[in-house]
Image (cartoon, rainbow, N blue to C red; front, side):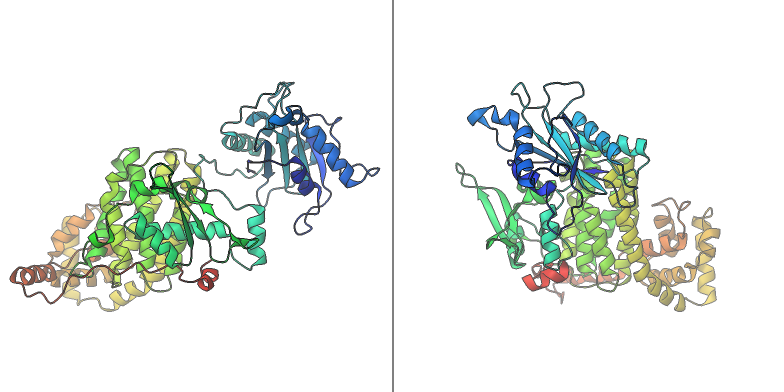
Length: 564
């Protein structure tokens, strides 16, 4: 059961909508199911003796009576509106049940506390099977305003209780950090235009993806503009500095004017102040230069993501929350830098994790600097390193599962569900990418004597896990990876000992795959030593060049439709 609190300034306008046919003639049998006074509240849907217009105006007069008594002191945004909708698949409630829901919601939110004779006037209108609309004017009979602070959260909490009592689907409780959902008008507009989602949602995803890749607020605005998005900074009148911003999607207009959305109206952590907390202020010219080894950004990202798993186990909440936010950037940039059919799953994982990256806990962004910088390097990676990219996806899916557990332990229900959804997408992407690679590694397995030597090494350093690793279907692939690591300058026995100690293998469904990708993520020691000697002698053939600009998520308004 989903409540959605908002405010407005026109009682008559809302009444006309509630009792009208709807934007697509979807309203059927609109009528009042509950009110502050059922005897005194006119019902335009139940009086055949009067015209609709007359009854609407009468109802407006009754509901808005207390506001009119104030004379010229009518407060702004005095109309309180709260649609309450059951979840898809729930049974349809009776009129009496919806009446109880309405009375409990207005009591819980402070609109009309139970037994308060001076409470605000309100009505609940049902014009569809699965929801009602509660409308009130926020002026009491004693001319005071009701105490409606945190009314959205209180409505949610009451709906969770109602779900349990009515036998409805139990939805996840929020913590006031969820992004604003598109309005009915926004959804209808997207449907008319043939778009997959509302402009607000499309802008939010573009903003997250761009913020993950850029290194300053100036670059953030520049890249957004390159995508065809209009940017309107807000300048402080006294300081002359930027204090906020609004975005408008390409082609999204009303009466010929762009429809603007403030950063905080897209998501709480997309506000100007929140972005400044995690985006350095350095100039673009100060960007670090590209590494000589194209695989280095992937190695650093894999290491930083593994460290995040440890932080979630041992770090304090602020540090962990900072790492989760930076991990969200890593997912966006991993999808940007990866190629192949599994890229769509990585993009879906990044979108899902946007909800899991923030909570009511304040994040320590400074503590996650290493992960955030490693994530940004991925956005400018010039080479997809194959198996190393899969190793990074493998590390990311374990962090997503750990994030779900971390949120669940702290009662963050929506975030836990979002992290679990991201995990499922990462798992699907991993399977798509890994299976052909593992099969190819298995076909290239070394000869029996070499595999036997690796088995001895395994039993020597990981005796408690050796049998499970050897019976894992990925064991032949692991022998190929061990042989390649040995060629790259690693000692197989020492390498197995190191990677086996990083994580408990008892709970791993495929321990050979765990070891395989851990080993794949190890740097090539001989290549590293060669580059180091070449750099020292001044004969390196690889020149350091600045990173190229970020690849746009969508470059034109025409492409916007495809991305949305």
